[in-house]
Image 1 (cartoon, rainbow, N blue to C red):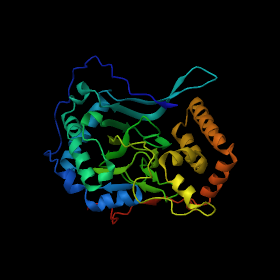
Image 2 (image 1 turned 180 degrees about the vertical axis):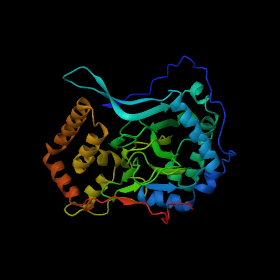
Image 3 (image 1 turned 30 degrees about the vertical axis):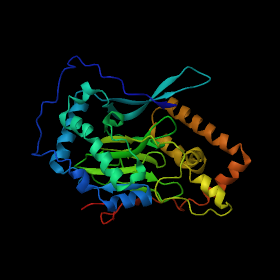
Image 4 (image 1 turned 135 degrees about the vertical axis):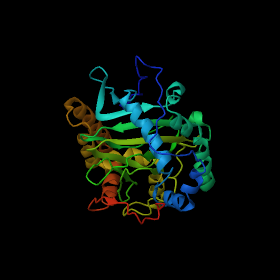
Length: 352
């Protein structure tokens, strides 16, 4: 199965543009990329595989982008998120993630409708260059044409995403995921938090607050979105690299140190992104299943199809005795109980 690209919207008023009425004064200040994302954040990214930056653009500018996002949704330019199921025993079919609407903004004619989002896209090269300067081995491309921008509205009612990697396999070039949350009224109980789960590391729940940027490695950070019960907006930028999927060791210092029963050579193999992705379905079997059931609630065909694919993946691993034994050793090393920590406001990952 794979994600279905968002179709181009079909509107009778296709030439309509955002009317340009923003609620707060603001200015575009791309120097905020450098002042907001500090060495301290990149140390956290390097150490944990993710980092959180608050007050990324400033309230006025972030509100302007949110206003454009709300206009995109209200204008029906966002489309329901879908997954294409390739069933060997049946005709392929699409499954819709309930309550998730998105718009891929790689089409220039669409971006030009929303000037602030369009300008953010064209200045993504400055973001990539700044991140490369702080962590050179990222080797992010600085060509905006190779960056991906997606606008998303979660309308609530339990809308969520199952466990997944943003870069599942070649030829995908995604290296770093940058999620900008735009939810000024978010409060505990509204849901829609992202849960990042480093391989064998402690899962961390991050609240989707206003003007909060979440960075993580696209190739190696397993993550999901919890059920959402209030309208939630997120703008995602994926930064590519020609070094993606080269099967180096995991970026950053979050590597598996030791696993009882496995020697150093096996640990080195486990620190390769492709191996972690291959084994994650079995290591996190129950977590995948829970997230699938929550994501496709109300769609029996969707749940059945996704669970069947998940079971097939796990069975393929369990059918190989050596891999199955390794999975048992890894499962024993997962944090127990599998508690989810909220990122404290005093964390070193956050800018005041």
